[in-house]
Picture 1 (cartoon, rainbow, N blue to C red):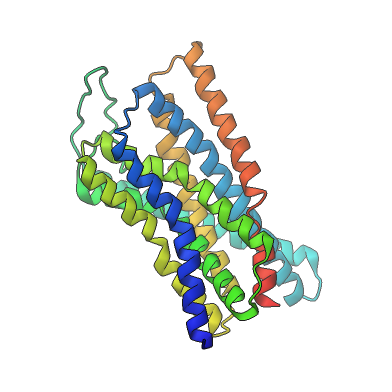
Picture 2: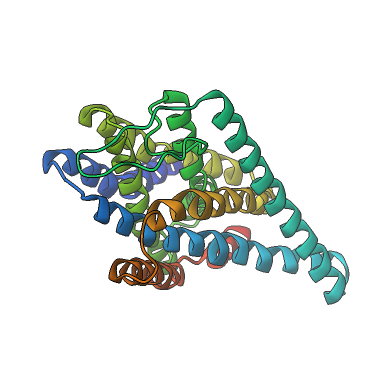
Length: 308
């Protein structure tokens, strides 16, 4: 086999591994016709909020800080103070830009794509139609953009998985750390897939259409895997660009986890009631599980193999 044929084969195998389980999982959701109570929705959002906050801070911001500091220390001849200062300014600036961009889009969609609130059988929904990710918003443009925001963190993941594919194709060696990385990716997209599917069900989107949308969302990482692999294959130093993308994705994920998810699980919950403590406990569990899973999600090792 030629080098290109080996690369294509590796990309195919890794892509099948990455999307295989989520596809099966997504297909099973409508088959079993899941029903989630309003309380369960709150628990799901609480867990996902804690999990995604850790993903955006510990994974994307944390790892980008480590790599950028190393780069700037080399550039500025071991001037650690200057390197840390520039790293901090760069990270803060990119996160600020991402958050302001998110807020601006939120305002734009609130003004132009408002949906109509719908009451459920058991409860009256809160009318926060100023939110672009309002669960009661049926506007397809608003819904599509909400999904785009939620999937934004797959951009750096897809690029890095692509670099792993190239590393494996070039060396012929599968590092155990890379396997852990891929497995941890599978684990941390499960809450995301649940959110995407159930948000659509809440908006009264037909089950068939919601399932198709969810499966398309799962497959959306494939072009990014191919892109990351091709860039690395032609020996372009894309590490700096990947960290910029990571930080922008982190700001998107941080915004949706705090501004959009938190209001969904604390709304109308009495702070002195039992449900309040259960919800906060689930949120804390989401944080703890996020830290545990991401402790195996080692981008540092992946980059070291690619650039060696």
